[in-house]
Amino acid sequence: MVRTFASFTWDVPIAADAQQPYAESEVANLVASFRAAGIELTQPMDAEFAWDFFGKLPHIEMYCQLGLVESNSWLLTCHPQRSFVSWILRRWWEQEQEDFVRRLNEELRSEKRISEVRWYSPEEWNRVGV
Image 1 (cartoon, rainbow, N blue to C red):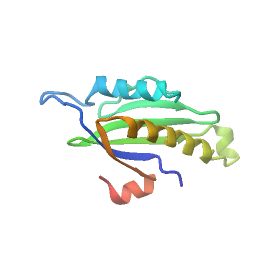
Image 2: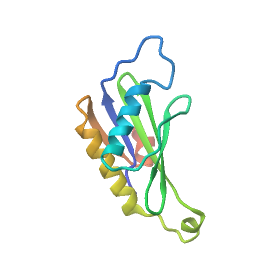
Image 3: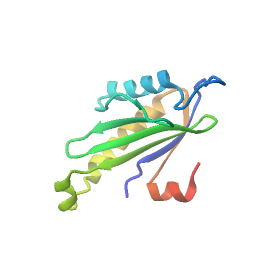
Image 4: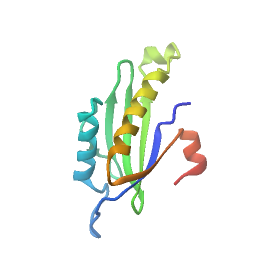
């Protein structure tokens, strides 16, 4: 199982009167840094409590959400979106998922205000949480 959920500490200012999803400009800059590193992503969109964006891979898309979990603790989740044909043929494209996550990890770890990056499978996250 590919670990596609990342928790991390991100030192971004959030105003006391800010509305969710938080840190719009910081999230846009982070996603822009992912794109600058060659990761094909859509612009982040407001999803009420988190930011949604999609990663384009050769055979699948990755639906990603980024949101504040608690004070300075963030969660990035990436869910593979397989086509009907991939689903019928039971193709998970795990190597593509792993490459995508590896590249995200490199960029997260290069960001000076991000620390304590930990990756989980969805099942591990459900057991552990933040």
